[in-house]
Image (tube, rainbow, N blue to C red; front, side):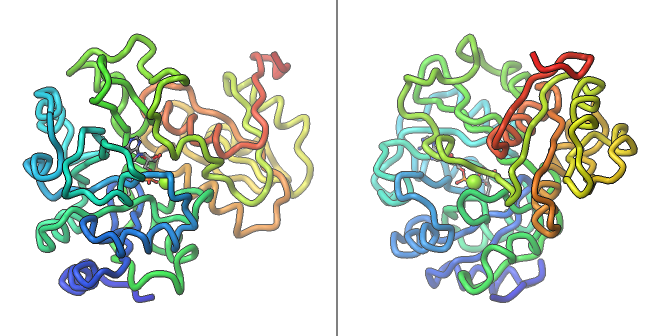
Length: 336
Ligand code: TXA
Ligand code: MG
């Protein structure tokens, strides 16, 4: 596996055109990219990631106009959303046309599309002039990679190259919005917040798709984002969660916490995800924080949970999925 610099996009395009797998930088997380119109290239993605076949992939587009190349019955709100949020961390679920291979969509008649906001990725998309199918560049079940090095840890020996576009600036994956349902609903919270979406359209009252509703984002049913050590997520105001963790912390445990609490956990292997009210910083750092525990020999991890505000909602969602146990505490650190 080669690391390509951001000047070597021609090389990356050639590999993609030849049906090879290439790690691509996006503003959310690194993606495991292949020519999205070539079924045998797309099938390699599932092998490299160890991904279940029933979990569809997102197509990355170079321009909003490409939506019309691969989607049908596009509602006008899709163009409004594209105008407002693309390039950016928003994936739209739309009806697909016959150009999109079945293996991309896991047989669904819909497809997820987004224009990523990373200059290197956009350059590659424009040069190949093909939609790039790409899931997050981790082994299935592990935290998503936000740097080429982390992607390399999972993909060494399995893919041709990774293009180094630096650290991801958003750090959590795109928000997935299902426009085939009326009213539209959020399948996965992510880099574009519910509050931002609601400036453009009315979402279903609770915002998300109810659990009986099909199809949900199939990927959301799998255990995800988990570091090797078992993690307990402590939900509640940070004074309370600090007390709860401090009382139970053993020497050598890992702690994922807000910056202002870091000094309270002496004896632990402490990783800060940024200030308690700095949600974008938490988004940028959460996956790297989770992965950094795998470089240590901690056998358990305690984590504080951000408030579900702005990008904090996405960070909280990822931490819940990464956790083996979730506890809720009051201000005094007592379980509720
Ligand atoms: O930010 C992102 O979205 C990153 C970067 C690389 O673009 N990609 C990403 O892909 O997170 P992945 O495969 O790790 O997650 C895509 C999610 C999965 O949960 C999948 O089930 C869902 O999107 N999905 C894809 N196509 C869908 C469809 N047609 N209907 C419902 N859910 C879909
Ligand atoms: Mg993923």
